[in-house]
Image 1 (cartoon, rainbow, N blue to C red):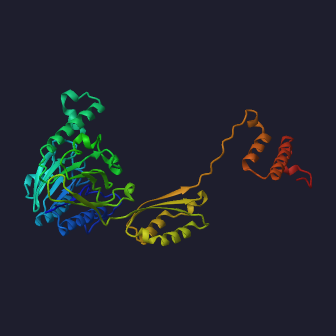
Image 2 (spheres, one colour):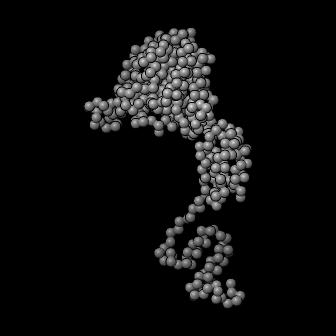
Length: 426
């Protein structure tokens, strides 16, 4: 019978950015958003039901999650085990302590030897027993390139040489596992890494140290008897290859505004019976997640606050339950009329879950740069003529302005002031 799998990644429990503390929950509202997405994934695994769950790394925001977060994570894993659904927990870069000898947050599951939970903290070939038969899983957790620098012969190696040798080491170990696959049984590769051709976002800035790019052929994924390649680390859901399917599930929630327009979800995979090559179908399932909205308005009226209130009321549907950041373009002389605290209150009253920021953008008049000769810089008539040219006035009016200016300059040079003019003089 077909084998059904659920693939998800980059849970990042513990992210609190753009959230507020909820005393009744004991954690941030953003933590609850991520837990709500996790719950939808668990519900889908139970409802399908799937034969196994493959988690492709980064369970937590960092390698030292609070006991509260660990309890929340464990209670949801227990729901899978109670339903007889095994899970593979891959270690991601956020789960990996800076010191390689320290344990990861997932190592406790390996120590307890819970039936149905396999922790993948090394490159290895795992055989997972499911109710639809065995599943072969080749695992590649996040392994920092700095692991090589502890070798005496590489202490003084250049970064380029370290990366070359690191990729060779990883590729050799992965290919060794792939060579042991049995083509008669379904097989997947589960990895937390950066693959060539992938689209990077927030995770590029969040990665610690170097982040080498791997090609399919460097790891041997293009020629191994694999039915599916389940990846984590890049937060945008994307497909890099089709035979076998090479798929990033993407993160389960938006981490920052760089992911504002990305749909978040998980992947359901069906591997048909038979020997390799088998037919593999997969489907991306979107999650209900907290929206992020970047709104920008230009306020041109004499009373910008009234205009803004009307605009926001018309956009109330976009504000509902969203994390909002607002940019207001206003003339510089009216910026003092914008009452930021009042705008923030309006946004919350209209349904925004959180206001990430309100930015005022003002028009700045730019002055044309004019090259003048040394003599012209001290000649008021030349300066006047240059100014009139820059104003692009009608010819007749421009000539009148220059003529009148010349007259005034001449009078000033002669010591005449407005107070000592003859009656009737202009």
